[in-house]
Image (tube, rainbow, N blue to C red; front, side, top):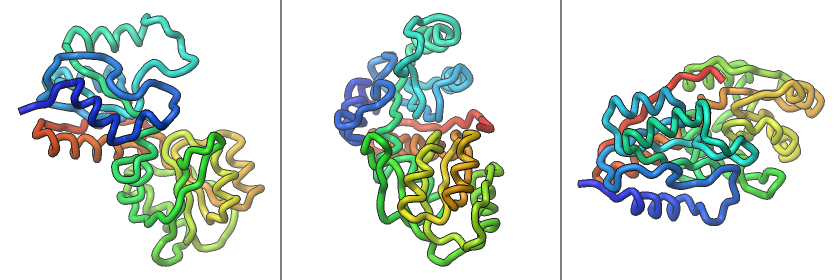
Length: 253
């Protein structure tokens, strides 16, 4: 059993509605490998570490959230990029990457999957500056003291978050966006959330949280974006009857 590399790309692209989403990097098959795929590895970022582990696992394909060829980066294939791509080509491994399409998906996306891990119920979305509905809104079943709320995040994600406390009200209304979405904090405050959760934090974020009166949680870029590729990878494995493995490459950011 297996699936062709082009068939797999068409299937995922259609599933994630890639053609309708403008992204910072190309989505889909970024590096072509062997025509037939029987084993796929999922990981957050297409680092050399992940590639080496995929080679050890005799993978035919790698599925990631953070791939290559980002807008504004050096287009030359030299240095680190050369070593990564060379390893993929030498071992005939396909690389599939999905960035914003995986964040946005309402079943396999990072935001939905993070909510499932943390036990949040979402009810609406709010847009970024480009109008993409990438911010998510939800409510807890019952209000929760902020410190306890943060302790639950640390426990479920196995990572202590960076926290900015701006008020003493219990948490009930929550807003979140995985990854490096700290600059959505003003939009989260505008929709009335008690707390905004994302992956990363900037120096300016601390001041904004305090002045906007919204609690803020930086739970880790990597930690908040581990779950979309896992959900998608498992689905693909079941759908096409192929082998699947998620490989965790620890990252404190």
